[in-house]
Image (cartoon, rainbow, N blue to C red):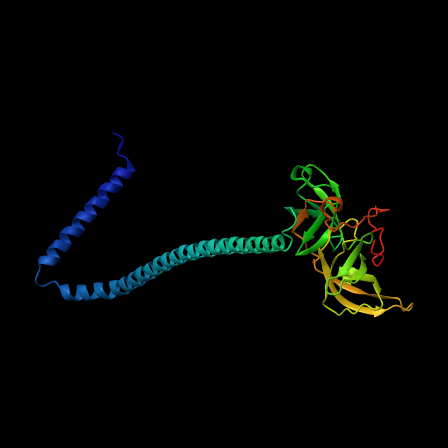
Length: 306
């Protein structure tokens, strides 16, 4: 008869028998007084000790790595918290800086409002300017809906900035006094001597305006204030234009010519006041006004008195 027993089953049986025999032998040796247990223990210790040491070191290394990973995670979290705080403080600082700047601008507007308290005014912001370094032409965010009309005077930084030349519903275009077409009848405040202040885009690069037609006998000095004259036909009287820089006598020995430092910084203008009056309405001097022959030129002589 053919043997149908599976070879794997036979192998398992043999293995089981061998293990059983070994276990029985070990039990018998363990209870035998003659068996050298101590020697076996020494041999086992010698073999197992390096293994245990390696396992211990491996365990220590694993613990160290886990601790390092944990520390890195904690440091990363702490760093993120600090970064969040830094970002928050930077945002707060930016906000406070902006608030401080706005406060200073409002204070300057308040001071300027006080300087010209006799005039009704509307505050406006500059929203655009013509290309170039200087604000020779710029646009503000107020127009006819705020009562602004062409010909109204515009002040900034406590001084005369320009004249409204175009008006929309919610915008106005301003030509500043530094433009080449600008010509203003003016008066030296302390001496009441008349002169003409002219815009010059090349000269403004030196921070100056041109002063002409000052009488030769006028005794003026650097730093004196120059304001718009009563005889100006486009500018209201008493608006600060700037401060005398230098003057010298002309070759005709009749007049003096010089330079004026404007009160307004025409490299940066952000906030302005528009005076809600034109010269024919706002003038209280009682002087007879001569109409202009062109938009940018005063049609009066600075020293004519008319």
